[in-house]
Image (cartoon, rainbow, N blue to C red; front, side, top):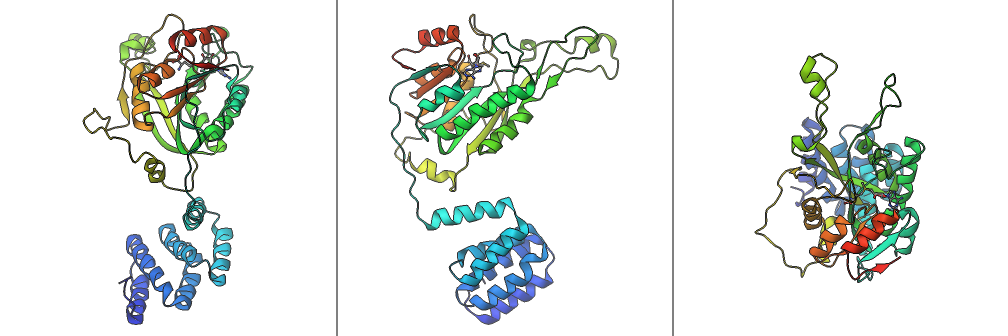
Length: 370
Ligand SMILES: C[S@@+](CC[C@H](N)C(=O)[O-])C[C@H]1O[C@@H](n2cnc3c(N)ncnc32)[C@H](O)[C@@H]1O
């Protein structure tokens, strides 16, 4: 009926709108009513003005807001839009507005020139990343330092650790291209007790990373759970198995989080994908259909917390294309860089520790340095 030009149909839609109680029906009708704005601008305007502030169902409000946006060149609709924005201060409407104007202004997504060769940057990545031009990285994958749990880390407090992570992520936001993904592998950690009479502290790092990432301008897309074989992780359950004392239960932690976020963009992901329209799509490979990935951890003589090639390969396959420039801001042994080269990507590897830098240089050939 939304396509009809008949005023009786329009009146009927309004009648049904008030008669129906289901949100989905109201939403569909609100959408159809919006289409009449081309012919009956005044009637639609007054209807929306009456209904939109009733705080009934947000799904319905969004449909009215959509109509307001499509008629915003009319001064009354523009004023109504401002009123609605101030009234609701709602993030969905905020995003709708940005998308609407981006599309209306027909902004083309341009791809800046990329670096052509693997690059190794030595030092604090919050500083070294400044050498990278804005918007020239296609994918970021990293595993953050695990607060003070490993021998290579020394932060004076957990807040200091989070502050340092924020500084690096702000740079990540700058260098990542619009609409592309940042993926971070983190898991809760526990620090050593200062003595038997004190309790150890367990930090749910991944929860805090959500805030740092969103404050930096990224938005949440997915959480992938990396599942490791139980014999490969530290045994925490032993005590309970001996005593079966309630409250002393400590399960073995066989999972880590792979946090998937996207850099804010005022367009759909399709626009990013369109830039690769000539790339061949492989349809006969194995696909992880769920967000649980079973992958054994990897070990290394030099670095105590390395990525397995399998984990890197999956991230590279699902979140980047051939010839993309991919960044690891805490590169450690350079495992991600190695996987990137093996899959025809160009890695940027940042690392603060001189020994690990030398190790990366051994593993990655033909690179630019600093
Ligand atoms: C969890 S490890 C990463 C291991 C890596 N995924 C691998 O496969 O080898 C974190 C690394 O970040 C490095 N690091 C810590 N803070 C850093 C900073 N601000 N800038 C650059 N590297 C840093 C540490 O030296 C450590 O090697």
